[in-house]
Structure formats: structure tokens, C-alpha cells
Image 1 (tube, rainbow, N blue to C red):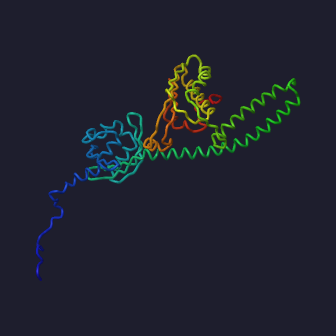
Image 2: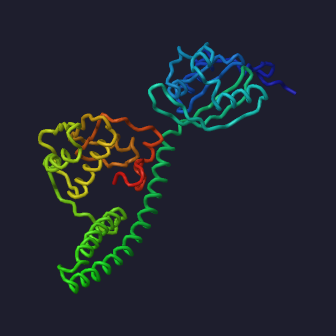
Image 3: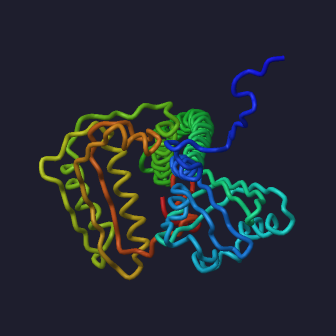
Length: 341
């Protein structure tokens, strides 16, 4: 048989061409371009490799991490559940998965899904940032809960309103029958007053459940704040000063005036209760434009557009994070029985 030319040549398939980038450079660029964090941690708990995403997730630079022991970089990490998972993988060489909530020095938090794998140098950690996903999921759950509460509130309010109508009618008949000079007349009048108050509560419940539409109209927010000013000064007392910072030429906005005034009064009363030794309440208005990227970054809770901001701040004791996460629940309160609205 005839040999073909070049048959005896041996091809070196692993030999790179002169113009081909080195494999480590290709890997480094590739790993820095992905959104997931990649870390390699040695058996002595030193950081051997971190990509750009891992630095962002931990809010540390490469210089802060590479070559340093984990416990030096993140003080107290050896007391966390995450460290125990890393330790188990390092010890028994078995892959692990976990969700880890990371607290940053500035008080903010991030949530990450971690995949921990053994590797020849120690362990390999892949981190996926799910902070925004968890936030949107929490908002969806809150919206579903509010929808369920709204349906319940609407049904109860309708039935209760029917009972109030009957009570008001029969009480009015009784008052007309006995006359205003009768000994029972003041008591019957108190019943009618209580019925009016209860009717106001059912209207709020119906508005909350969207069964009774509010009546918004175009208003000047600065003027509305000014109209409530005298009421607030009487409510808050002399030991609390009120400062207003109104924007010049405020944009007019569509809002229900009654709901706005009730909102402002409730915020002010809560601020008063938080300033047991007196203080200052500040009410501000501001024109603001929200563009599409800003709206998307907040899950489109507020669509893009032009808005008026009403900001109410005080010198009170503040609120813990656990309470902050509950403040938008419709019937949540920190007030004892008989206090608050």
C-alpha cells in the first residue's frame, strides 16, 4: 500500500498557535463577564480566585480578598450558618446548596443562592444574586394578601352597612316618637352619633377594598398641606414644632382630598407618639420625574411619569427593620389597645 504524504507526522493538538490567547486569559475574561459570582477558597481558607461578580456580591475588591484568609476579611463569618456549610463541604468533599442573606456594613442586605463544590485546591463557590427576585416575590405575596383582605373587608363592610342603615332608621323613628324632651332622647342621639362614626369606618373599608370609588380631583398639594396646618398644631401640642418645606410652583396632582388629609393627619399623630419628649415634625413637598429605568429598578410599583412627593419626617425613636417590613399591612399597628387610629 502506498503511504499518503504526511502520514507519519504526529499532530500536537494541544499546542497553541502563536496568535491564540492563552487559555487562562480566556477563562479569566469569560468568568469576569458573567453575572454569577465565582470563588475558589483554599484548604487554609484563603481566597485563591474571585471574579468581578463575587467582588460585587461581597462589596470587596480583589485586593481585599486574594491571598487573605476569609476570617480576616469578614469578621464573625465563622459564627454563621453559611460557614458551617462551607466547612462541611471542605471536610467531607460533598456538594452543598444554600440560600444566604448577607448583611453589609451600611445596613443593606443581599440574598444569594450558593452552590458549594469541592475542588483540588479546596472548595469552589458559585453565588447567584436573587435579591431583586426575592423583593419582587415578596411584593407579589403582599399584593395577593392585600387583595384577599380587600375582598374580605368589602364583604364585611357591605353587610355591616346594611345593619347600620336599619339601626339608624329605627333609632330615628324612636327619637321622633318620644320627642326631644324625653329622658331617653339624649341616649338615642348618642346612638345616632355612634352610627354616623361607624358609617364612616365602613366607607373607609369600602374604599380600601375598591368597592366604593374615591373622588379624586386635581388639587394643589401645597394648599392642602396649609389647610391642615392649624389642625395639626392643635393635635400635636406645644412641645412639637412643625416645619414645612414647600416646593415652588408644585405640579398639580389628581388625588382624593379627604384621603390625603386623613393620611397626613395619621402620619403626624404617629410622629407625635414617637416623640415622647417633644421634637420637630417636618413636612416637605417636591416635584419629581421618574423615568423608565428608575421605574423598572423598583419593579414598576410606580409607573414612569411626573409626581409630587410628600415627605413627613420626625425626631422620634425610629423603627426596627422587622417593623418596617410590616408597615404596609392594612391592620398592622404597634399601638396598644385603645390607642392610635
